[in-house]
Structure formats: C-alpha cells, structure tokens
Length: 332
Image (cartoon, rainbow, N blue to C red; front, side, top):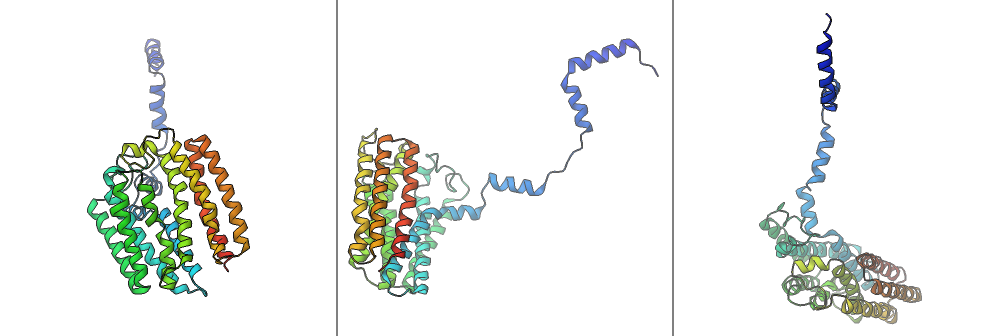
C-alpha cells in the first residue's frame, strides 16, 4: 500500500519536531533490557548504609584502641625479663575491652555534640542508626567485662588502673572539653595510662621505669591532639568544644605548645636509655628521630594550614610506633 505524499510530509515534520525524543523511544524499545545484578545491588546497599556490626565496631574507635594496645603491650614487654606471653595477652585483651567500652560510652555521652560536627555527624548515634540505650548497654558491658577480666586474669592493680582511666576520661576529661581549654592537658593523664597497665600486669607494681614510659606517651599526646584540634577547629567551635587555647584565632598559643612539647619529647624519649632500659642504638636513633620531628613541627608552625596540620598528625602516628619498635629491638 502506498502512503500519500501529504501524510509522509506531515510524518517527517513530526519527526523533525519530536527530534531525539521520538528516536529515543524507538531505540529504547529495540534495546534489550537487562535484569539488575543482585550482587551489585547488595554492594551498593552496603556502601550506602553501614551494617549494624560495623557500627558497633566503630563505637570502639579501632584506630585509637590500636594505639592503646600497642602502648599496653610495650609496657608489659619492657617490664619483663623473660617474655610472659600468656599474661601479656590477657593484659592486652582486658585493656582492649576497657578501651573499647570507654570509647563507646564516649559516643553515648557526646552524641548531641557529635551531631553538630561534620566529621562526626555520620557516627552511629547522631545518624540514628543506633539508639542511645543500645550504645549505653554495649559500652557498659564492655567496660565492666574488661575491668573484671583484668582483675581475675591479671591482677587488681591493672584492673584499678583501667577503672581509674575509664572514670577520669568520661567524668573529668569529656565534660571539661566544653568548659576549658585545659581539658587537653587533663585528658593526657588517662591517655597515657595504658603503658602503666601493661607494666603493672607483669610486675604487679609501678617503678620509675614505668613512669618514664608514661612520660613519653604523655608528652607525645600534645602535638598529636593539638594538630587534630587545629584541623577541625571550626567543627569543634560549632559543638562548643574548647580544644584550643582561648582567644587564639591565629594559633599562636597552640603552635607554641606544639613546639614546646615537640622539644620536650627529645629528652623525655631518651629516659629509657638513661635508666638502662635500652642500649645505645635506641639512644642515638631516637635522638635523631626527635630532632627531625621537632624540625617538622617548626615548619608546620610557620605554615599553620590544615594540610600541614594533617601532615603533623600523620608524623605523630608514625613517630610513636617507630620509637616503640626501636625500644623493643634494643631492650637491655
């Protein structure tokens, strides 16, 4: 059957006016449709919403807890003349429970403030993925289990140190973060306690050598946490947290503290050698490492950008395990 010329012209004009739309409909009709891949859909769902298990793991702050456990293991190793592996494993495991429980309770305590900061707004509580009572029960269960575990499997001194660390962190340091910039200094006291717990687990007492390890970890915390505070100063301000010296918009006081503690880290890090805990390899290696760290902190204090503060943060995270590793290798 032949189509009249007038109709053909009208149809052609309609196609021109319809343009791509008409052609797209036709192409879509001809294009074979593929069924969605279940594996890809599941992966996208998991990426969009973390699982409940991963949320509970994140409550324990794994990165921070890992550094805590390194300090505990170091304290126990440096305290022993012959390695008591089983006892040290008990100490590390019990400390992990206490540290994870403390972190979870900190999430519970600061849930409203975390919701005001960009870097913490997606945490399980402010995002609504977990309920406060779930987090409270989880944190309390871990903490109690850890303290009892240390008392029964290690000794009472280690357990009491864990309890004191938990209470001072949650009841003193945490609320003070919104009251005074001295909170950073106060928080450094419980922050350095894990190395004492490791020492007490093996020796059952604390000696001057234990306090030398404590001093190293205590001083190291200041450039570490002040770098974090400078990076996220706007976030902390939104949440009303006074993590930096007051009335210091240019960071003069903050970076003076970073430089001062970075300088103090050099002699403090040499105390283990001066007390006969390590050999000359540790002495000279850590002296050079400390000088290098101070020079880097000096450069950061001149730039004062978020990028340089982040680099300083990374430097502190590398510095401490390297010092610990040399200490272990060159133990006397």
